[in-house]
Image (tube, rainbow, N blue to C red):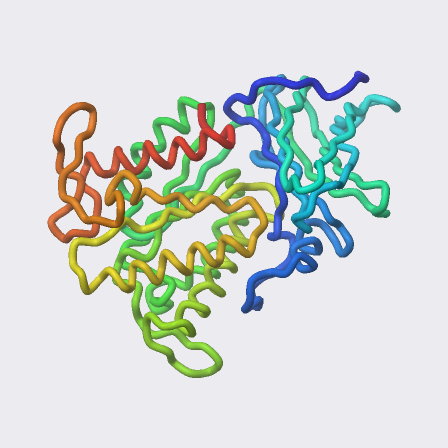
Length: 350
């Protein structure tokens, strides 16, 4: 099987290749990753380009969405992109040259994996001695896996999103832990749990909605307890979030969708919600790609203004529970449909 990579429209179960910072342990990193750290995380010291393949399992003939990312952020770089099936004869690789123009950081293209088997997708620059590689399993019965985890906010989202994942040929695993949070290790140590569940479930995508359950206890930073929600507290929160994000990225085999919190009703809760959202954004920004922050506030509390009701499917409906934090049934549907739109752009849903 020879020839060049064919362009095709991506469908459900397609593959996404982007930069991954999860290939090294970021657990102890305190500051945002520098370009040098990002390049090392992407696939080894000296690599300027990197990739994520997600899902790492798909069906024959599905289109692969390919995103090439320049970690230096300058563009003007080229590389050879190849896909090869294990056991195929010499010259059976499907290859093409990809180039990011000067100033262009990301490039999107497509590739099909037409036959069942174990495939290796490779990205190589002539200036670098080694290539970046990701393995992809292609089989007729492949089903991509979606993990939905967090505190009590994920309960309804699990049920609604599961139907869309199933229709797209995937399977969803719910992992709710009500009352937990980053600041509550006495309930659940989230960084450790993220590593354990990512190894056990091997998700191709993880949706996280965490921190609404009064996640404002003191954190230990530099051996001392610090109260919510100043800069030191936020920095420690960011550090632990990065450990979780790195775990769910699975070394370049998954995508992560981290849900931001909509504005709460009670004014005294706004500062902590804002601090947690700020920490999520800061942690995600240290990964050049692979982490999607999903701002459901655009449909639940647009403009940062709390509201109990919204128009949904042509009718005025209750979207928040009496506590002013959790989502009522219509709010769950609004939020989940927004999450699904983001996932569809990556080809994780039809």
